[in-house]
Image 1: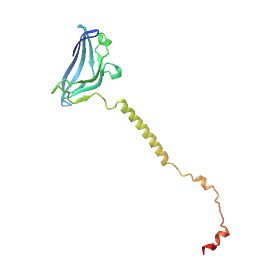
Image 2: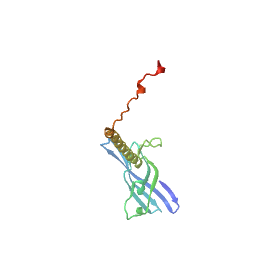
Image 3: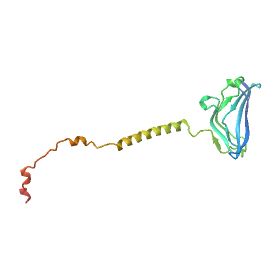
Image 4: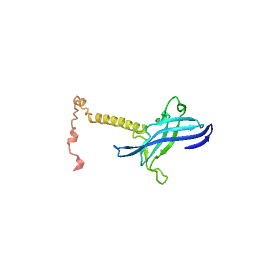
Length: 174
């Protein structure tokens, strides 16, 4: 990618070095982004090794952030601390690349970098587990409730004798 002159950088060029490898276990070719080279001021260079940027050769690779920053899961690592790459932080936002088998100048279906257990999903699972445990404990307590009848055993039975008036038939009912 040639950008030319941008602010203080003269002759900015970004090169993505990729490779294509056949894996017998997968039964297909996979492409890998090996490194990112930044050339600037016509003589300076910063090189970053890429880790975990790969996809099947028939697909494209997509990631929200490909970066050298820790807050974006550091997929780009400076190649050495002696060159100028240690002074750079690089971030590609909404990054999508396809190395091989490009048809009709469009990306193929993407292999995304997002993992299954994102922090939001993980916190949802932990919260659900805690609520499930509380519900199980509450159900356990309800099942083991006992009727309080020990206090009723000691109560004296109250006897109410029937009044003689209640035994006489009602005069109006005849």
